[in-house]
Image (tube, rainbow, N blue to C red; front, top):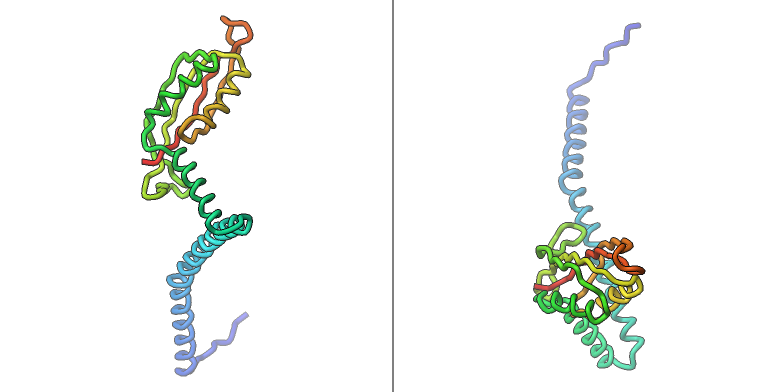
Length: 194
């Protein structure tokens, strides 16, 4: 089957070429300007939503208190509490870890601090709070004690230690030398602002 040939006039060719050029320019503008701009707008919208949530939290705090001075005092006390929980030096906290254990009748077999590392957010960027870099110090500790004493110790660490602590792993085995006691390896992080 033979198809008839279509002949185009010069004007028709110009119209087709100018239409193709227009579509090409539109696609280039869309790829190089619209797509990056829409991604940036999306990230700005997310940042705005987070900021609005923080504002709503502060407004909720203000509405629940009797006056603004009281709300500011509460905010400052919370900030002071968090500042105290993120010290700049880890030595005091490391010294307290075995002292608290001994006071609770827990035998410390070993205490091994690791190397300090920067704390990164979910995007892999440095976390900076009040101009200080957030970091953490991993610590591995081996203890022998009764199980209930170990649970009490971990709770005590979180409340008494002048640093924010998070338990990363816990390995508990029955200790064959002492009846009723367990041998535990505790891995936790101390968080610091340096």
